[in-house]
Amino acid sequence: VEEGRGSNEAREPAEGVLESQTGLESLDLQMQRLQIGSGKCRHGLILPFHAASECEEFVATFNTEFSAVQGPISDCFQASIFATRKSHAEVWKDAAKMEWIVSAFVANATQLLLSGNIADVAAAGVRTSFASFFEQWIALKLYHNQYAIDWQLIHDLFYADEQALRGYLIERCTSCPCLGVDLSWKQYCHQ
Image (cartoon, rainbow, N blue to C red; front, side, top):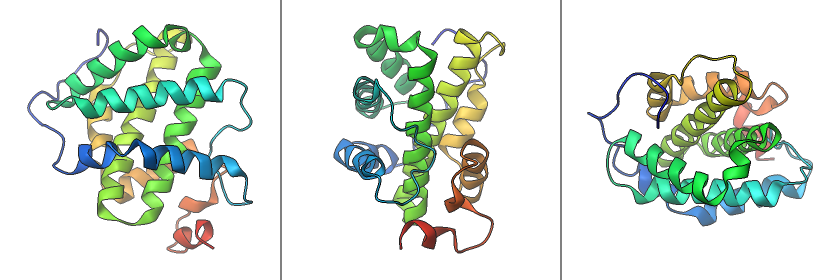
């Protein structure tokens, strides 16, 4: 990863976090549930989208590579970026596709956060850090309105607690009532 500042070399992902990511089946199933359109909130996922299947492949490759690396977060990101640049180079250059990818990670993080399960909250932090990375990539490389990737923010989101994640996700998904300020936010999605 060429751009950025800060270092997270000293900390490795918390035990159990990467293990919860390896279940790509759960990500795929969650994405399918979000796309079905059952009348429930989609947590900000952009639908319909003409290139959704290509972007889903990108997301799956990114997740697989990130989960495969055992080491510092920066190594995981580098492996994921390299793999997706190799297999999906055109996606990296397409703002609409990248924005869909951000929306997919925000939606997935929101769904994980709503479960209330500790392992899912940790996985939501991982997905939120992915969303932040791709938001910043878009600003830096495609819109040229950001100077560098804020790796400290990505690191902080990776390890964030439920309250911090909820605050971050609320800002990204203003149309999602599920992350409201009162404790009834979990009930909205699970009726």
